[in-house]
Length: 435
Image: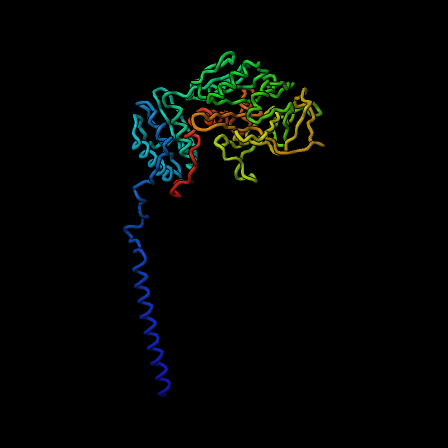
């Protein structure tokens, strides 16, 4: 009996000690844990009013101060689930721009008419609009180039378009002062860039004017040199001509081969089939270039020209060859995968049974960006294998990325100050910036 009472006594003491220890743990846990919400206060705590801080790069601050008076930069906040996050980003940018000085004004505007974030620059009667669904690491470059299109003095862009086939492109590139260039005389060094569209055979004198313009620090885009599809789509006949650019391009380590690039991934065009009907079938002479970071191994180019490129058709593309030069920085921006070359392309309509059997398939460069020199003597050259922004190719929506958006990237990279186009991408300081 005595042994039983002792056991019960020891059990009671042990239980009391455990209870005291548990209470002490609960007290310490209560000290560490936040107090539970009362029934009168069940809403989540408000986010801090202070937005994330934006440190503007010198190039961005400089172009902001070039905006004329009465210019408004509107950061529009959409009525969507992402609005709070974009509003925090927009508020930080509005503060940073207004603190940078200058006659322009940055504003934050709610916009219930759209579900996508937007930055809009209004200068008098002109409006320069840009929409983007994600802030991301390239936000500063996107904003800076948008500001540059409305800044003073305006960016001057020369056009050599003897076939008058880029009317849509010229109308779409707002914010540039377009001027005709004939190449019959020296190119004004005041032009920020020159676009040479589908040039035919150039005389030595015209080629020399291009070379001298580049040597004085100019920037040039050569789009689809040496290929003529007759200005119709799809073409019935294709002519490959010598554009007369070999001496000029040789100085940059570029060669044009008189062969057409064909690829398995290509546009679909109405094609005659037995029975008299027409079906949309792949048309290899119109490769589709895919700049898709999520699906490319190795990753595609991170060049500014490739920003948001997506999938872009490159019809009637001439083969480009690159020879390395120590004084030239060359980068292949866009490529065609599983492509092959054809020499006999006189008959190039959809009725031709294009087949890659027996042809070696490889990756072919379709758009390259080259630079020479440094500082104020830096020269820039873009060579595109295809006249991808020709009116015949952009006249209708074919379910791919807008070729004119790619052309705008090319022009921006050529014409805007180097300090601006070379802005380093940076990750947002807060995860609330990226969505």
